[in-house]
Image (tube, rainbow, N blue to C red):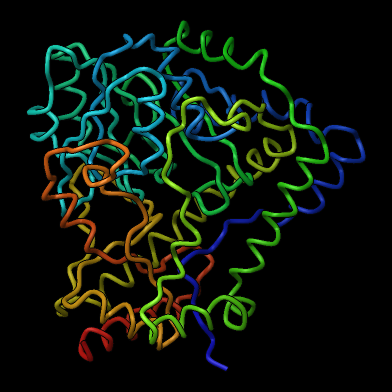
Length: 410
């Protein structure tokens, strides 16, 4: 049987099951001391004064809009290439999302396009450190300060990335992170808001005081689902379960990815699950995960460098990393000739690749008619290759070989 390489790999601390069992025995799965400890450790890691947990990364963003007291009806600028949930939550919070284009070489917000999008009604900007690469924060923060705009960093992909040696998240007025299964730090869901502003942090904390704690059964279900998902993407299991579906689809023209996507829909009113508290067991897993994070990040970066070297001299356009930024390679995005044919050939050779991890929001009907964003449209033609930390260097070499062969075949 062909051993397939999945597009994703979850980051798991070695003592996950032991940690869960110990906290359950002590009655501390839901509430306990680890939440406050994790918030403090996380704030220290990203260089922020304050950190407040949330049920989801998206909830942290929604709460930040309110904690920053952005005026209702004002405009908030975000990149045209981002996860649709973020502009939709801005709309649900009473703001008007406005899309600026991205640089198709870095996949991040283009400062010149951001500047053109500013009006007298603009109150904030959301630079998204997409795929794990830090935005040009000098230009973005400089423009925001000149126009009196709040800066909310979307760091869902980018925990550990830096700009001029400083971690993303606390470079503007606030930032938010996601801890979903496949993110740089996995706590089986949840998120974090960070800020250096004590008043904003107090308002964030006040917003969650009345939110309900999840019950223990729901916490255990979340952990069990996460365990099933992480097992499903282990290469041996993936090769005999999910991969045959992808392999067959490469011949039929079907797109199984659509079953993995969250349905695009209005989020006003907020789904009730968005307002649950972050559990103590998740915080305990996150606290331990922070101790492994630099090792995981270094491994992914080493894999990316190996791919850079292996793909040099080919017609494949590799990721660009600006001089002052660093990349944690949540995704390694490349451009190839004949993209769709290359994707099919990669899958038939046992390497699962992804074609679009986020959304070109200017063409999402939920947001109405919007001017086109050529940079985002170009970025949407990239493919994302596996470089996650749990791969071996042999796996990375195979990814490179398969992609080069696929390009030649295409």
